[in-house]
Length: 150
Length: 104
Image 1: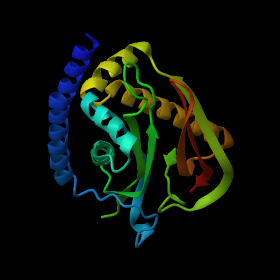
Image 2 (image 1 turned 180 degrees about the vertical axis):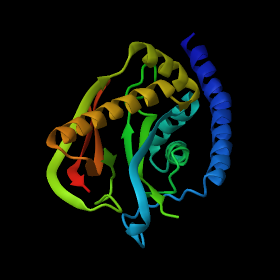
Image 3 (image 1 turned 30 degrees about the vertical axis):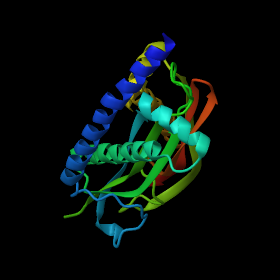
């Protein structure tokens, strides 16, 4: 019985999880193209800070988790060592999504660009009924949105 | 209250420094959203309940920072940073800190 449940969860993760990820990537690519007019930079300096009219901090966060199938694969990979692609794409998705949300907030409030972008990542352990304790991350991103004098 | 995470408030002159201000909050997760997250965990993707929880918690921490700054008579906080630490299973502390200043 346990084995049947396991097989069911694995296939559910494989089919649904894969689709969720592909859909998410498509969505990210589309929104990134739309938000190209709001650059986000990691520098604290601009060429001329006097051009800035207004500044305010903006932030965004995402909690994102692996599907059952990938968590299982990652568990196997943990045993043999090496690159865990499932986590790489997960974190990539999370970070890009967080940046997009931050940019959306900035755009909504009429800001022109974001300075001093910083990331913060935390693993959220032990989600109930998860097999392992990993597979769930919070990604947070923050920066200073500025309005430029036209 | 102007908040930035760079070393100044661009376009404004700093009149007075008040030193560090900080605020934090400790949150545990809700059983209901935890159950939903457990289900969502099977297929992967975003756990919206947790996203909201952490977002609210950070907003509260930042609100406390602002209150502290206001008490000092500041009207801006620069160089704001965030820190997160897991206190025990299912609970986390979210902290924000920065330098309170007064600008023109």
